[in-house]
Image 1 (spheres, helix red, strand yellow):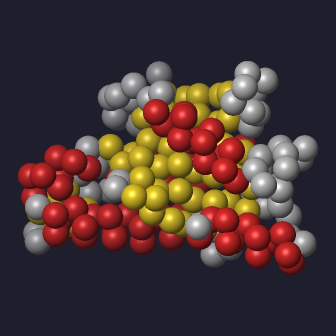
Image 2 (cartoon, helix red, strand yellow):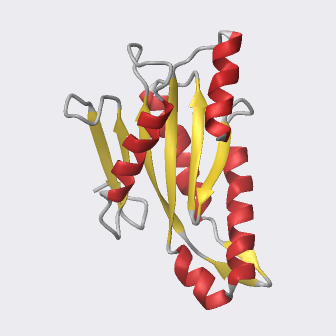
Length: 171
């Protein structure tokens, strides 16, 4: 609902309707939650949300979709290189250890990226969420994948992916 309201407000003011969506899934969150308790998991989620807020522009929208999934709506940001840099910042933010009651908690993240095209409908948001969610669902652990999808999911799309191993090296 928050994403839809933000888009409606931007359309009403005539702001650039082009956008990118980062769909973020936290990896290794369940072991933290199960092994250290729900208080630790909740604290980690709150801190990750703060880190996300610091990683993006004040005009962008960060939302928790549920569980260990987040989305970032980058309005007016449709350059794949810029979106990729922001996604890299998000991935790095997830890998910095989280402190809870003197213990270091470690997770990582996977990011699916969907970028609107000039010909896309102003009502593109639902499709972008579906695109990015589909990219995350296709991930094969232990690799994190940033995949940029700029076309429709019906086949005529421009997809680029980069696999990163746990030591931050490109493979």
